[in-house]
Image 1 (cartoon, rainbow, N blue to C red):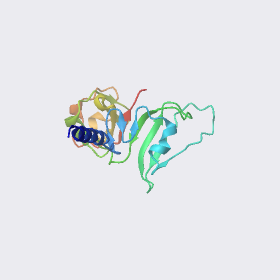
Image 2: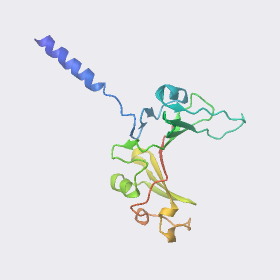
Image 3: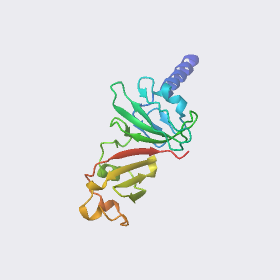
Image 4: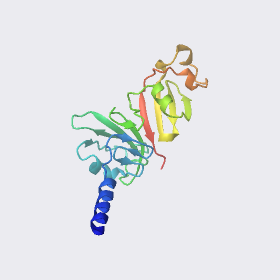
Length: 184
């Protein structure tokens, strides 16, 4: 009887620890099946049912980062990945731009979220004032959210020296871009 109990307990532990990772969940160190240690060479295996763009850079002396687009079967963009080093298959992914709204954080933040959704669910670490946009950074999930300045009141759109606070951004301001950043 004791052996049966131990066997059942062991099997229960094994099956409960083998739960499948959500392919659309975003956390501090994961975007779906990607992790902050995923290498470029592993992308074809991770996205075996999707399309991974492969770029050939004409200038071998180019030092710019080469983005890698991940498309689903229908050709819709899921993610845009930026490796830490261009043209290096062993390079890890540095930035992940979330293009598909199915990718969500555990607090239900996606590319379709508004500023209010972000500010109510996460502590805002920093707000940067750029030429045509503001970037809201949330260190808790290694994320940056870009909001077009067209979403801001007119008196805040043109002064790049202004220190923009969370209270200046309207609750219904839509996201232009959603990034998860891994500084490996």
